[in-house]
Image (cartoon, rainbow, N blue to C red; front, side):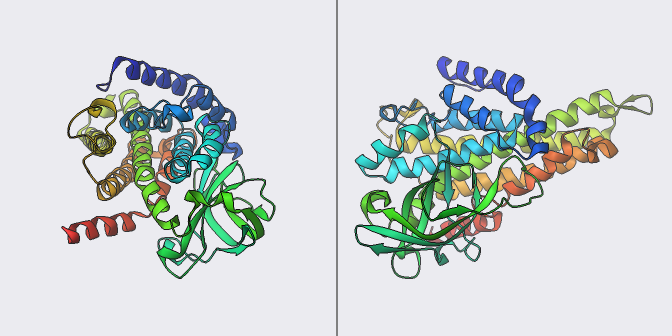
Length: 393
């Protein structure tokens, strides 16, 4: 068990029990049916898990980001679609809570924090993915509101979310002309395209949002000011990338668990295959990558908590003194997701032919791992972020 205050340790034990008894046994059924596990997400809300890192005045638990990431890890270990779903929900909620006006925070955040509504984040477009500042979805001023036109792509929870954080262009070309809007699913003029047909993560719908002359009131402009959208998007991604790192660690741990159990039980040449060096070395590398990924993730989470002055850093003289995490968060996401891709690949190898069948979850883990190298910025973009930080010194 991780070093945590007693109350947080009990929380993690509760999550582990829930994940083991309620989530993991149902994961395969949700995947095969390509159905988002909304009832499981609703249960997260009833367990106060959808508001872990948010302020108490919004109904949250005000817990350290480290604790939230450990919860994400446990949920993803049982079912990646649920863990990633909570990560994306938190990403959207954090943007609204951090950059919204006081009135917007009172109006839009509590239902998200409580898990009564499901949040989603709409940044990418068909022709603007890694180059998000090239987006063409436009919000033009119309009287006391805006008219949105355009298409947002690769939206996790597209079609099942209740509230979207949407980036759209209100001004000049480039990052400075982008604004952010809070748009609900029942917004007139918003339609959702059929979900994408994907390699994995079938229980997590990914779809385009199509805006056609959608009349959005001015009070939905996040922060009450135009031009903040790109800043909101990038700041939100710092935490989002840490969330993906936690999801990756959980998935890697699941793959390691399955491979280790199988290697202990499967016998060849008169003994369990874990006693053969070729298999034992694969498992040793899998375990080392997973532990290293967890350490990087938690180290960056500690930086974030230190900068926020929460958890063990509350009241310390050096709390809130900087510690930018953009590059470290990119490192955590890059390292953990690359490591998990290799670990799930090795898990299939340990199981051999059995690993290539749907009788075991190893093949699903391998298919799921790939998307983690793509979401919240491809790993090539993470390297770009890190390289630019190094160039600045």
